[in-house]
Image (cartoon, rainbow over all chains, first blue to last red; front, side):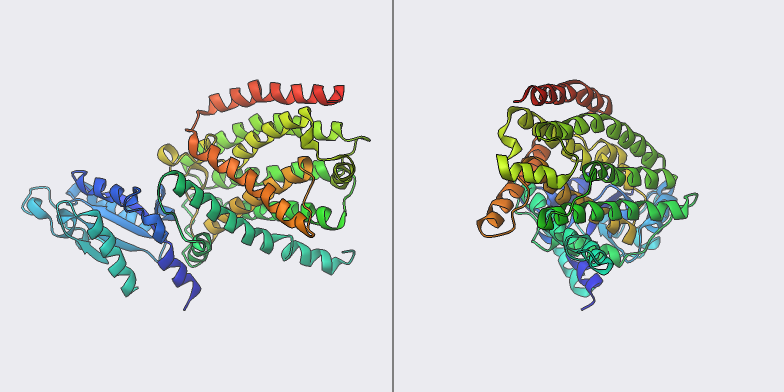
Length: 137
Length: 312
């Protein structure tokens, strides 16, 4: 196996991008990092800068104002990188799909590798999505 | 070790870059594992730092618009090379007693170069957060160098006859017991532990790369292999600084028989002290850090120096 690919699977650094979310999914993402679930067991950790990230966790329904920022953020992440849509809003738009300022969902603007539905999704669901995603890489 | 080829090999492979990088990454795992245990987590597996470096090697390097390309990419390399040289010098002195006059001063100089490299790279990256990080790193360097030099020279004063050679200090300790047995050198050692904390930019002195406010500060713009070089350099510093303290204050590395075990115990004790300080203190502000190093820490270092001159 390619060593850099092995490294990529064993060490995913997450950047957490809130694209107009109500903060509920964000709290669930932070739950994954807390001692009960502790995703550092799998080498995942939260990083502060987009340039260090491998995984972009996007939550929120993507209002019109956020679209340029979302695209710019995606372009700043060094490849190879994957995007995971967290929560009902990011996957489909949820209850905001008919909103006047709705410009999403996320996969309309950036390529999404995995969808985690739920409002908000449980930490177990987020970890499960990442595990399934790692199987396809 | 007289031949040029031998010196090049010892810089590149055995006590130098490769060896230091491997042991440094293992040490970084110890750091992460102990931090996880302190926080009641399980923590990463032992190969985690290696996986991080391999992954970063395979990623794209993004050079920000407006950055000085050469300076941005060269600066981390300077730090890596400097740490490799320091590690080679320390190990060769410990193993073969090959010192030269003033190598202690050389080591002190070279240990500053990683910080300078970080400052250069951050300034070249044309990012405002990185600039703030660079200015904080600069103030931190100015703050900790004074007590560090005084503390190291306490050891030099204690050794008789006074010498600036690392092997001279080691010979004195082999004949008269470790320097850490003296009151003056205990004070100097405490000062050095605090300075090492700042040199590694670990909490409470992680001001230049404050995750929450500066988003990794000085290396915010680095990605891919350049970031891997920075991570590698940090891991090597984590290995080299305790070795330096052991050499100067704690009898050096004994690499035969039971001495190997004793050396490992000394090394692990210093690492655990550093990691525990890291995990139990909050970040201070830059003005508090400068006041701390120029105030209490320098006073402790000067008291240690006076005690050493008086013969304690």
